[in-house]
View 1 (cartoon, one colour):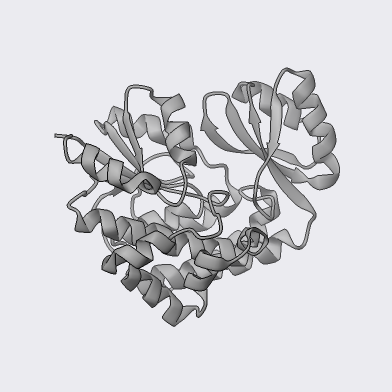
View 2 (view 1 turned 90 degrees about the vertical axis):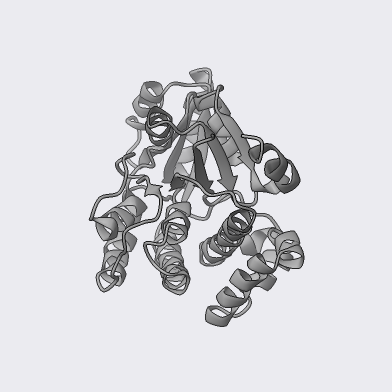
Length: 302
């Protein structure tokens, strides 16, 4: 019997039209989109017909991805696919926490809307960008970042890939240094320098938003971006601090596999996490909701 983990996507996986097929063909998904629209009118329309530029704005990206991910998770559950563990990449951690039952759907969606507003505001205070550095090891990326006053390694994605955030004025020179060291810096489809000191103000404000939330015990084991370990009783602190802390994704996945997880399902519109997963553990079974018919057929055999 497979031991399954759901992996909820982060910013950068969005695209125009995402979630429309789920909405039109699965009543469980439509219910999620309708609930999100009742709280934030236009969310479904933004997913289905928003432009790439509109979806890149953090205030839109995060609520829209959250809606798609929870809709997809609900469809998987309706087909009897239930995980033993879950993790989410950046904003996906809030979707994973909601799916796990630590907060109800309405609370989770209101929180992601607030998170998006705060991170958008923080991003607008500094001209920042992000890039994925490939073909270099973690230590080399840290060494190159240390040459700059405001370029930081922020997401430890998989072997040979670290995302960095920094001032746009320094990122061009940083990318040249990466090339000189034998690597490549690939710009990311995000609107700010996330998981870095640029987000400290957003982190503090989100902590205030979380202070009145009563978190329940999760129905599955939920892993934290900040610690790469399962959540304890400090959900509010972990959710707030991850906004300005590195995402320890590769380490998280390795802890999951060490616990016996052998099947991973990316719950989101794309395959970014599935592709990372193959680089972290080539032996694991990996699927993505964007290939739903294949996923349902293959996971049923596990």
